[in-house]
Image (cartoon, rainbow, N blue to C red; front, side, top):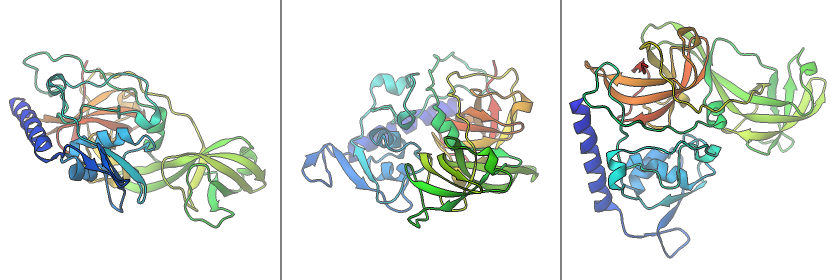
Length: 357
């Protein structure tokens, strides 16, 4: 644990030095004139992490950019040609460096984890390793509410899915669809009488089959929600509707099934036993995951896991804590979790240990 603390302090010092060394007093935006913000046009393959590294000289400041652009509901989903308002980096106060903590308030979906001026320069203060007793007790850290939109868009691992039909296209002949777009549907045989005007259906696609990174055993497929459609016409096997919620772009061939509203995760929990497992997949197949990424672990309801339970990501011979996960949805043998904190990036195959009461 001494090594972790030294690493945190080193990261803090380097981040603050880089901020004062490279952040200009004012930035000229695309609209002209001296401003304290920059307007940036997103390019292909951009990420908020990379943009933050280029403009704020510190990739860990990317939540500052997310918080300034409330139209971005999922920080993993940004699209070319969209505009980003990039704020000036704000150095943390002395109190934030010593003990950063997020306000536990109910956020809107677009700012669930991005207040207007988050304390992002400091490395998150992780609790001590569950396998190493803490020498000194640490003050409790409040954790943010996780909104239904974040949970719904995260997806989950499942053995099999039930599909009511597929998106066929649109009258305009377009191939990608988002919020407010009208689309035509083809309902599968036997499902036309299960769909009515006014019903809401989840648009989804799947990825898989997946294999466990340690055992090689098949573990199902990844269910990837794309959005929600509200039905406005049903004629036998033909139907149509309007997309009322988007997590990403939908396209012809995407499947549909009944929509269920997710429940916010408001309370952090600990398990009765130190359940151990692995990260078995990551959202969008990311190789490395950091704060606010979504990952999937090989422990679920059959292991006593419930939404809100905390897991620590551990590495090395001493099982040093390098991240913290919060379970947001649970299947029988797997769970979906949000990365709440990270000291360093980690990937599929990383070990996790549940926080113990």
